[in-house]
Image (cartoon, rainbow, N blue to C red; front, side):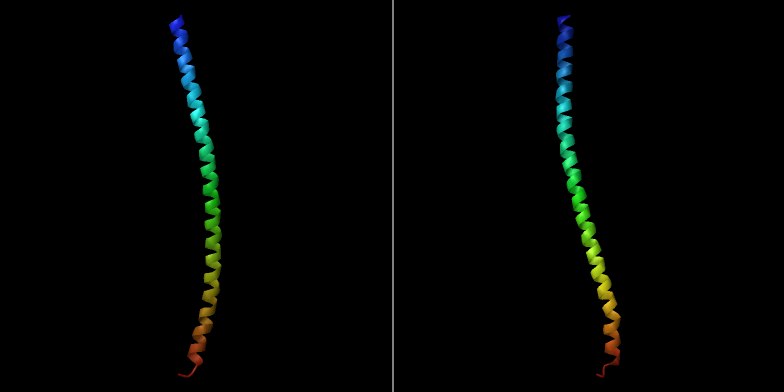
Length: 73
């Protein structure tokens, strides 16, 4: 009987240790996810800004080309 209780106590101790480890990993994963989401939002914002700047540049190109065609050399 004492041996059975000792085995049960050991298993419970291992289970508790595993739960603590998993809880710590879970916290770390949540932090990592939050950081990844923030990075993703920053990259999306940067891509949107770059896209807007490219559109502005593309709008100015035809005007520059048209003025080159009409200027005498």
